[in-house]
Image 1 (tube, rainbow, N blue to C red):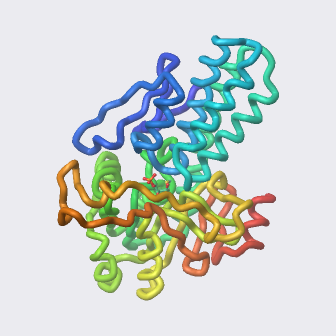
Image 2 (spheres, protein in one colour):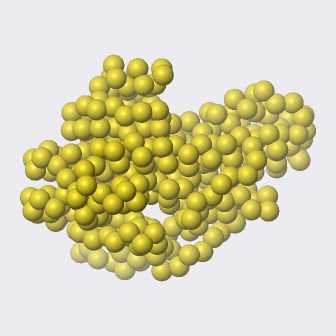
Amino acid sequence: MQVELENIQPIRWHDDVLELLDQRLLPAEQKYIQLDNVTSIANAITDMVVRGAPAIGITAAYGVVTAARHRYTESSIKWKQTIQNDLEVLLASRPTAINLFWAIDKMHHVIDGLDGDPVEVLLNAAMQIHQDDIDANKTMGKLGAAFISAGSGVLTHCNAGALATGGYGTALGVIRSAWQENKLNKVFADETRPWLQGARLTAWELLHDNIPVTLVAEGAVSALMSSGQVQWFVVGSDRIAANGDVANKIGTLAGAIQAKHYDVKVMVVAPTSTIDMVVKDGADIPIEQRGADELLALSGQSVAAKGCEAWNPVFDVTPASLVDVIVTEKGVIELPNSAKIAKLMQS
Ligand code: MRU
């Protein structure tokens, strides 16, 4: 099969090799790197060459294809055993985004049913995951935009756009759709310290699509909300627990609390591959801690007082009670709770 790629392509499979747009270099440079072994693919996820929950899952699926090619060439008899190591390496690349585990689990099932050369079948499975994600984003874009009234302002956090997915985006998919429907008065993105996904990636990709965007510091969010310019806080998610608690980029919780105070609605946009029915509530979602250097330095330049320590959890959990609507490709859930999520997942 062929994936119908969108305008902005964070992930592509070209000449039998995985290519990733190096998101560490954006917006200054648009450069693809080619990866032809599982260790380099896992490192690319860990080092955030590619990031965003659905994009991490898709990358891992192509990682499984790459691993299978190597293992099957080594031994057409033992490859199903030896590839298990590679799956472990991919699984260990980042802990919070459930899409990583979901995608590898899907590929594992395909492996179990295989007989003979695995590459073409696995490549088709990875491409299907990729295509399904793009299609889901388009569906969610329309479903989410339906909640937004004409003349609204929206604020988004981190980058839940084309760059974080197979293409089009989750939160930014809704913003793209609402923009196309002429509903948006203004789009705000916050910087998203410390990695600056908002300033570097969200602002870049919205401008790329000619959608005007205004950047704010995270410290300006209360002032922005109190000014009445924003009616919706629209975000993606890395993992949604069975009760509707939402793990997303650090600062989402603060934004949701501020939204509650200022009567701004909170919309979480995520495919059902982000919902983890095994995790009962947000307390059980593993939260990734990253290196202090991400906080203490900016673009390699030290910005903090020498000798100071840093605490750098890169996700937080917003309780379901602060979420007005979860938008998935299977439908929307207003005021989410366990029963509503279970019903959606069974549909
Ligand atoms: O650390 P990152 O950049 O991978 O975190 C990404 C986010 O938190 C996104 O908002 C989330 O994955 C939703 S992406 C559609």
